Length: 295
Image (cartoon, rainbow, N blue to C red; front, side):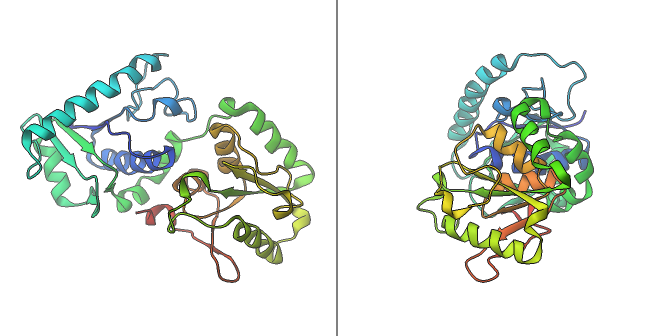
């Protein structure tokens, strides 16, 4: 009987949870396991593989039922049960039996799921609970990236208005450059925060290599920004629903961002170039392997 990998911990924001799920799915594809992810029910309408799949099952179930409300209620009791087992086992050991293993990797270094040790572990337990964010299998993600992209194909029906804006912005054969300005939770974190003016400089540098006349610019941000930063953009920076911003990031032709796993993930599933903002000229750098380098 194939092992079941269970993700029950609510690890960070949506981008972090999508990155974690991708790496776990790649491991499941490699080892012929099953996955249940209870942390993505709120985004289950975003993607083909998660639509009417509120338990985040991989491979997805053949019968899709609209029961997201029920499975959202299950997540907290399961989390509490796992925490209880961890406390009972003590901090020095990992709860482990023939039918259940709890792997707690809440802090780095990461647990490599593309290792022989992890493969042996899932062969010895029926259920493996992955607790925490630090589970990675970059080798397997590269190997199974086509299956991941198929599962995470964005559903345009979940963001009709943004999809229409993208269609209009491409009128006349133009391309769409999306700029994802991360503020909000990044403030106070030097590794995550980049001042908005550097995003604007990156856009100007981008158009030193590309003809501005061939592009429309869409700015996604969780806060409103001064209009003078992006004076010729097609859509200005203003707070929107997450699904609308994700539609732009997944549907654009190129994306400029910084330390955001959500923007890097969107470029991965859409196979579009990601340009990372930097403080030194030319203020941006293409990162073709950005998704596989996320830590």
